Picture (spheres, rainbow, N blue to C red):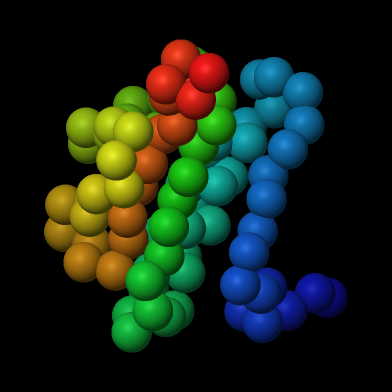
Length: 83
């Protein structure tokens, strides 16, 4: 079994509709609990911007602290701004 607690970066990739956003949110939430003294960044490059739907919080192109989780910052990149 792989020990995910030794990682500092985790990427979720694959074809559309397989649950990448859901899994990455769950993974980030688990890390916030396991590492309360560390800052966790959940970053999405998905143009669908569904992080906010899953976490039920507003998510913008600026990394902001998630409500009720002081060690989790969430950001959804805006592809139009990156051009």
